[in-house]
Amino acid sequence: MKAERWKQVNDLFQSAVERAPGERAAFLDEACHGDDGLRREVGTLLTSYERSENFIELPAFQVAPELVTNDRADALVGKLIGHYRIESLIGIGGMGEVYLARDERLGRKAALKLLPDSLTTDETQLSRFKNEARSASALNHPNILTVYEIGTEGNRQFIATEFIEGITLRASIAGGRINPHAALEIAMQVASALAAAHEAGVVHRDIKPENIMLRPDGYVKVLDFGIAKLTEQKPGSDEHTGKATATLQTRLGLVLGTAHYMSPEQARGQKVDARSDIWSLGVVLYEIVGGNPPFRGETPSDCIASILTKEPPPLSGELPDVPLKLESILQKALRKNRDERYQTIKEMLVDLRILKEQLAAESSFLQTKARPGSIVSKIKSHKRGVLLTLAVALLATAAVAYSF
Image (cartoon, rainbow, N blue to C red; front, side):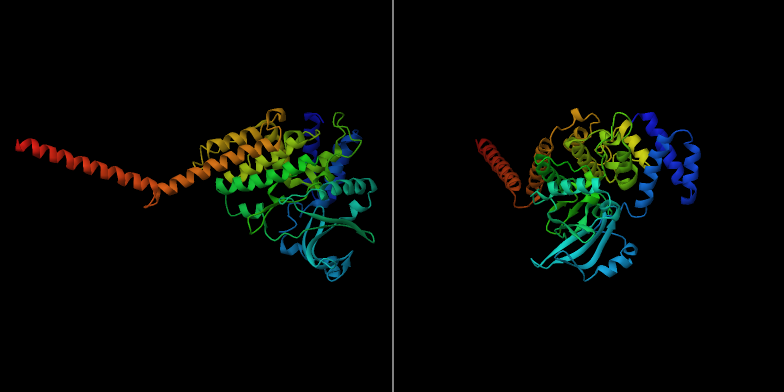
């Protein structure tokens, strides 16, 4: 989609959102009069926005209490879906409801995600989802959420995954920025997960703090591998002829809160590859170290404009604890031209590892230097002893010379 067309679609979408829901259709009919394609594209975005409004930003594991109450959830508690007994509602999001369940066969906790009706009635989407979820379930890595099962119970489609006790990275940074040492550890674990996924041919496409869980034992878990693909471009849409409506739907509807983390190629509706995940991880790392995302805006379109046209403000000038090497890593990960970025996540992981080891060595040296009984202290003590001995010797020599 050309920039002019994108701006036209987005401007109309923003204008429609500002109006009362009952006035939006009439507004679009008048504003798009004579251009059925424009009306259809903006209408699709608006429909997606209205369906996902009020909860699209909420992670499944940290949903607001007022949303964790609905009749359907209450009715499901205690019921069996497959061999999973529902215990409680964990959260609600754009991809459905997530429940804490008990695996009756294996006696373990599980997170059970029930897919929305809008997905289960679309055979094409459902087929794509199942194929992609199977790919995700084949991933076996300690930093990737384990998918136990993809199943059907009556007319309900569900995914069973491991249940993670912890908090999202989003919740963690709500209290402030993370120090570079801890941030590097988190980024390395996410990069390790992405490396395993990319080797298996799976691109996440939606790396953001809401999709990263921090366990109490220090392990990082990346959520929703493969599932993010569901909201990407449908088969048959042509990015070069401006018919990427599904991609626009992703941008401004189901993943409205994800605009900050989109790569330039995602924002343009182009085909993405593993380098898009590298960009998104760079954005996350920048945000958790710096306290704010590198590309900002009051609306998704403002964020996208920033991503496409602006460079991230340097961190090291304002934050003295940010190493220059980390700044260099971020700059390379956030190159707008993907051919100039890290070409594989493993390359980025190597640089992250080297920097972490350097910082650890520097920290260890400083601690050793400050410790009273340290080697450095002993060296200093030894030097003082040598100087004292030398002084005594000089005095003795002077005394002998004087006596003569």
